Amino acid sequence: MTEIGLFLVLFVALFVGWAMGRKNPTKKNKQVKKNIPTDYFRGLNHLLNDQHSEAIDAFVDSLEVNSDTFDIHLTLGNLFRKKGEIQKAINIHQNLLARPEISQREMRMVQLELASDFMSAGLLDRAGRLLLNMASTSRKSEFQPKILTLLVDLYEFEQSWDKAIQIGSELIKETPTKKEIKRLAHFHCEMAQELQKKEQWKQAFQHYKDALDVDSSCVRASIGAADVLNSQGRYRDAIKELKHAAEQDPEFISIIIPKLKECYQKVWGSGGYIKFLQEQNQKKPSTALIMALVQHYMETDKDYAEMFLVEQLRQHPTIKGFKELISLQLADSQGYNQQHLVVLFELIDQLVQAKHKYQCRQCGFPGHQLHWQCPSCKNWGVVKPIHGLEGE
Image (cartoon, rainbow, N blue to C red; front, side):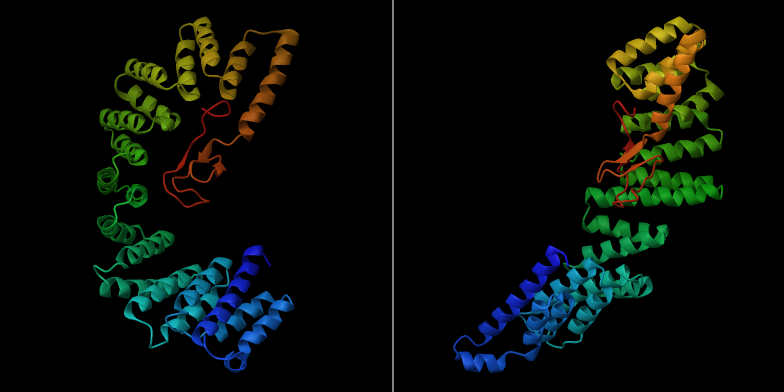
């Protein structure tokens, strides 16, 4: 058993002893001993025999539910859920609900924990019914934000984006936290993506706009709106959305560049596109910007392209940029020099392929693909392209 688990057992044992001592503080030792439940001694016996799980069960059985022990029962149920012993958590919380002596406020606290138990156990229907009933009967109460948060968690897990948007909108009216605002904006984006697959462009575009109304910094919504406009042939409008995305978060420039290039080629040619690249590279250099400029300069002046790349690498060294420099020099090399450069290029290429491209800024989860919701910590909008020597 972990040190936390052992501490839990000892804590419960001490609490039980304290509670019974508090209940009979003036009685003689002999009288107190008679009042101590046999479950308490059974728990101590299990504890001495290293049977920690059985010890906890025995101590719980020895605790009566009253105003002094309510919090410890609630805490034990929560700890069982976090340890993965969901059925024990459910049993404790259901046992508390069955007690007529608990107050209305205490009943709401237990119901919230029980709903969390059901969700952890995968009993989503039961959790949903309980939470919806609480939401309808606890309006304007102190528990409403927590109830709505759990409902949003539930609908997010089910990917019921329309319901998640509805409840999430209510939640940010109650508690407009940055996390919930960002999450609601991404729900709109998820809904928009589903509509895009059905080619329902108007409805999809509206959800992207709703996302920006909720969170004006949602770069995903701007990129998504540009994709919809591009699909409809509205290339100039798509360019505006993509430029806005670059202003929202320049770290996503590597995703924006190929989309922007495609749109510019369909309306104005490369002039505006190159000007955009140069301006962005002045503000915040990245490998994606440098590579795009090098590709353009190669069309007219290869020597200048190589000189530009070398200068940029001095100021902003990256492995990807070094790989591009080797590629340029390969074309003009011969004999042993070429063979050596080929080996070096292959080694650098393998290194680039092995490196992750994206990383969660919340928990550090790395990946080769962009996830708008981190697969590890489940937060939204925290995964971004990696920058620095090994990235952009």
